[in-house]
Length: 453
Length: 120
Image (cartoon, rainbow over all chains, first blue to last red; front, side, top):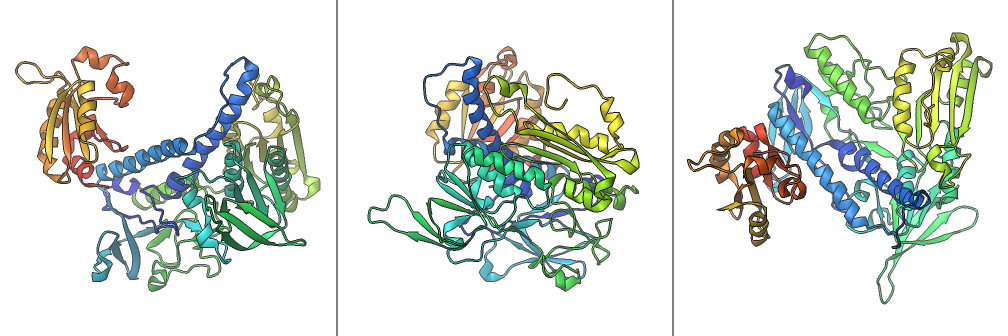
């Protein structure tokens, strides 16, 4: 859309290879269809369940038992996603961007082959398109476990948000933010959830906070099976088969059998860079990870080919980062701008049942980079006012900042664990970008009574 | 494809039900006076654009041309079209049962109307 603003002729090739279950989706990428958007909505559904429970203490009276209907929620979520898909179609058309729901592949310099999904593959009909410049933003897809039965009996986040039936008792394999967020809302909706973790939770995030998140989830109904990995998934058909039961054989000190309805699979995400003909145009990728190294102007080793988003090597995998990088790139190319994307101090939030907002260094990374004696950590537990009346945990919410003593006690890390963590963190990210110091923070008067103060 | 002309919310719902199973497209406009002119100037602009693209609809489609009511009825924030169909403006052209719709000036653009009629 940005390039079209500068009178460039633009084509977008967007194609979704169906999941093993046959699932696909519309225009908008992972975030809109099978990521941030449906995730946050389902997280909200779970939060509302909690709020209903709390409400009794605030005087609300209802005699019926409160239950959750998966289909109603999923339908509403998918409907909203549909309106976003449509909105993008309209926006692209209005800006005269050519959109093809088709698979694109480089075949030679400045040339892509476009395979429309509706065209008969038998006739191998395709179209060649040439362009001055190309931007690769193909993102990633879930990587399956690679064990027997994984594709037949497991689903991934690609399938979860549009699953046409309630997943029921679920085993989540993995402890990334995707795994924990999904496990979190599933249990919040009333399901029986177990998380199987190979080693640590939330690799790459502040581990002190990660452990607090894990503790909270455990105390709130999620079973964790730690230091186990699945080695086989199978199904046992009963005579009067009403439910599929899944027997899981797990590696570990003692063999463990878990029966559950659905197993959700998380073993990372793979960049979609291996089958788009990058070798035909000489774009270098990291052979092991599939990621594309770029310079600080998002340019690959081939000068007319650029890349943004999750496929970039050593860059943050976040929607707003990709959007910002893309916009600034186009402005540099066509509007004479010079501003490069700032990948430092990018705020993020993990929407686990106890939300976690962060900006800047984790404590361990700060210690590693600056030395323990050169950083000062200020921290505090807090009890949200809204949690007092319903007697919710008074010692779980937590905030800490990490300061660089050698630089005026500049705030180099911000971490908050509590409700509305995303809303709280956003403003602090702007302050950190401006070089917030501990003294400035101290002299900022708090808003009362809120968690952020 | 066939066209059905209705006026008011209950008639719209009834006609929508009778066409169940077929793709249904609906254009909502303000009432027309004795001379056939709508009180809604945007509807006057949009109608010919939409009519010109009708041949792009799938064969079995039903096109419902719906007059919503007079200006006062439309301005009422609680009218049935706003409440039940979540309409926010007239003209609105939508594919019934999907989130796909075009509102106000979007209906002036033949390309967008064609996209609505032909896309999945």
